[in-house]
Image: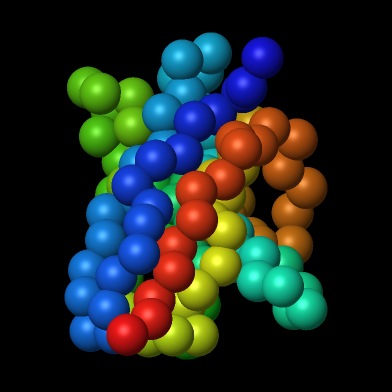
Length: 127
C-alpha cells in the first residue's frame, strides 16, 4: 500500500548522527524529484532537502537550518535516497517523510506538489 518506505529514525542525543533511507519499490527514483520533509507537533511542515531527477541534473537543495551538517544522496543501483544528518539538535525532532514527484528539467522545489509519500520515520533528539 505504501508508495515509499522511510527508515533509519530513532532516538539520539544532541550532536549525534542518523542516516535516513527512502526506498521506492514502485518507482525508479532517478526519474523523480525527491524531497525530505519533516513535521513537528505544533509546527508547519518544512522541507529539509531535495534532489532533482537526472532530467533536472540532480540539483540538490538544503534548508538553511540543516545546511552544512546534512547530505542528501541517491543511489540509483539500490533505488534508494538517503539523508545523512550529523550534529543533530533538539529542534531536529520531527517525523521525517520522503516524497516524490515526476522529474523535469527544473530544479527541485519544496513548494511543488508531491503526490507520493511514505509513512514517515520518527527522529527524536534528546538528552
